Image 1 (cartoon, one colour):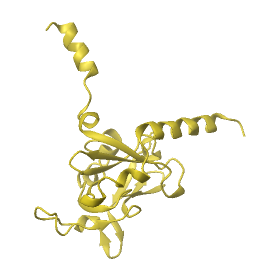
Image 2 (image 1 turned 90 degrees about the horizontal axis):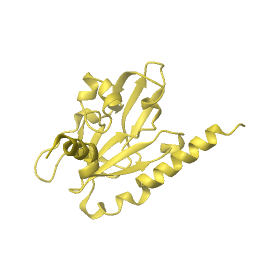
Image 3 (image 1 turned 135 degrees about the horizontal axis):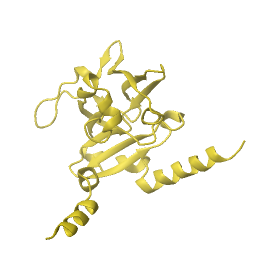
Length: 182
């Protein structure tokens, strides 16, 4: 294979995310405009919760002041301890369960939600030490959490989520609405 063919192959090769995960979206979370979440669903049912590209945290060159997994006085997602094959001990989360709160340097605060029902397997403690991971690599090293849906619900969890095409349609309608003069 010569160099030209090799470059063409590298340019068209899908990323690991595109190759092994299906992207699902939840737009305008809890009625907050543009607060979009992305769920990366693997074929083994695991779902990785991330911020969508359009989320305000990833826009306008914002920087993150703090990330807090302490949801209430009695509930910290950092205390989540999972063990064994059946993932015992993981906190069960519903569609709108808060996972963390992110505060930007301009003091705006965003609550990140689970978007799906299931057992919380892991929260990303790396973003506590290095919040810039969330901005630089939101789909890989900057993920928020990993959730395992119940086996019975694994086929139906995507019913309330948007496919990539549906999400892109909503985003393009937003862009048109924003460019229209009032």
